Amino acid sequence: MTAVLPERPGTRTGAAAVPDLLERLALAPADRTAVVADGRARSFGELRAEAMRIAGRLAARGVGPESVVALCLPRGAELVAALVGTLTAGAAYLPVDPKLPAERRRYLVEDAGADLVVTAAEGTAPLADGVPHVTVAALAAPGPELPYVPVAVHGDTLAYVIYTSGSTGRPKGVEIGRAAASALLSELEGAGIAVTEGGRVGWNASPSFDASVQQWVRLCRGDTLVMIDDETRADPALLARLVDEQALTDLDITPAHADPLLDLLTPDGGPRPLTLLIGGEAVSPALWRRLARLGERGVLRTVNLYGPTECTVDATAGWVDGTDMPHIGSALPGLRTRVLDEELNPVAEGGSGELYLAGPRVGRGYRGRPALTAERFVADAAGEAHGGRMYRTGDLVRLLPGGRLAYLGRADGQVKLRGHRLELPEVEAAVAAVPGVAEAAVVLRDDVHGAPGLVAYYRAAGPVTEAGLRERLTAVLPAYMVPAAFVALERFPVTVNGKVDRAALPAPAPAPAPAPAGDSAAAELTASQTLIAGVWAAVLGAPQVGPDDNFFKLGGHSLLAIKLVSRVRAELGVSLPVKAVYANPRLRDLAAHLDTLVAAAASPNS
Image (cartoon, one colour):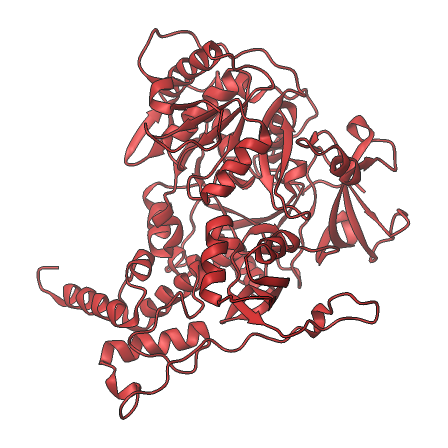
């Protein structure tokens, strides 16, 4: 089944050969702004000159096609220069988010067999033994200015390796070639998604996630990249301000973060030249209807994107419209979708089955995992795909009229949580590896402290505490993979065939509330503390909150922190930054900070 999005104004069509990304980058006007970061704008001329210096120094170190350069850099202008410089040298980049735990960073570098690690500062602790390190400043230091001439590559030359959660307990690296990355940009244009010439694109995703690829490839056609720092990403008010101040034309965002942003983005209901590229997790019917209404009024346009890392980011796209239920649209121009039953027979319209993807953007496979590659990248049943392969997504979909697809869920242990793709077996393996844990199971539940979250169930074989579990897992897993709740069991429920009965695992207990002290805990609260306690109770689902309670120890996380500041803004009209919640996690401290903000807002000099 092949289908393309309906054409929109400015849509480009045609099946001409796709030029390499860097061929297009070389044509961008030298004086046009390429990157905006940390209050500074860099032109395409400056970026290309810096990329050539980096590429030359990488080549002097023996880096070239099929080499892998690990970029352990925060989101910013230096990351963009290092990424473009690596590709200019003909090599592939491996993004390693500096915020990841040290053990995970080391694993990524070693498992990928990286030839070099690029860091932000001198003296950074080695990510892996025996792998040379160099700072981006050393690579980009001033030197002879050379014409921008990237190293020649072919379409299958490795462009990047991005790791995803692993079903075996180990993350696995997905290899994507240069032609596939180039085709992604061409198909976004062909589908009418990337239409604004000289657009301004917000880089919102972590470089360790494939959504970031969709953002930086736009640079190669002459669009401006606006780097969004972590503080702005986490605060809807700051993000809405950046959208306006930087006149963004495109913003990639997850549904969980889009919902609170809309309240601030469209207060007057007026039109804006903004396209929301929404994806990473399912869109709720309520959010879909809200976005559809904004689209009908010409306020925003929104496209729902779906795709696995293994197929170069985006595979299908659908404009958010007035249809009753959310859908993920149809295949982008260069991919073909197959919806197959358990016997690999095509399903009829209205039927459901597993989604397979075929076409030139199907990746090379998993780095160093030939058996897993053979399992997931299978022979194309229809014999039409590039290389005769198709990727088995593990996603269940329903085939709708016109080739559109409705996402139904996973057929295995993989889940999506706050835009992150993860394998439950990997989290289970980390819990089971904690000393004192005899058995473990992890599930995704819809309502953990008021929001979807992971729950870890464990049977102890020795002394183990929730605090100890959380501390150990925080040291080895990314923050989004650390369970929000832990449940100790004397024994696990099992099915008739002896497997863990996940459906019978008990719901976690409500977030703990301190016992009343003195007359009552409520009597000890000041007015501002009472207000904060009420918001916490609503957001966390905690029946009672005391002045010394800690937001994060009660089950709070980044998404709930966003909801918290949104509620405070709605009730008090005061903009409470999300970073204030992290800086003041104890209720009494956050209330005191809020008092300061209220007083400053009321001051005649403010």
